[in-house]
Image 1 (tube, rainbow, N blue to C red):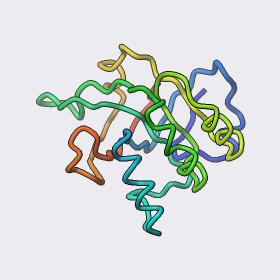
Image 2: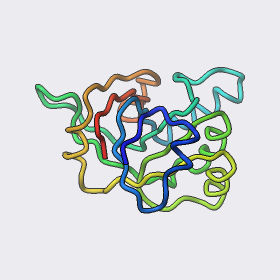
Image 3: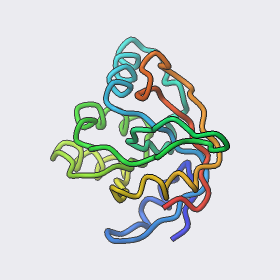
Length: 158
């Protein structure tokens, strides 16, 4: 199924377990250190470094790009590390998450409550995933290095 990011509720509700999705549009990369900072910012009444409405967050550990590449390998990281922060982000409009591994009961309940979706990326396919990323740019927390928030533009990414 071809979907566009950011996601809307109709798209989220049309997805079923086991569907293969090809995403085109803007997705964000953030791992646990960035998630912690984002939730702390929200607690202080600040805005996120991106519009959360319909946003898709990919839990990825990027590697440096080689000459002529947009990004290096772009494989998923374990989603459970983001679980303490995920319900809060879903509550403000984030609609999609991409990663690997199981989610906590609290995250599962938040996914249902806020009508969001968790999509599994295949571990070991990092070199293939990067080929569908057409643009990558850091947008926040660059001091975190590989854990900075990135904005990715993807085409038929799966």
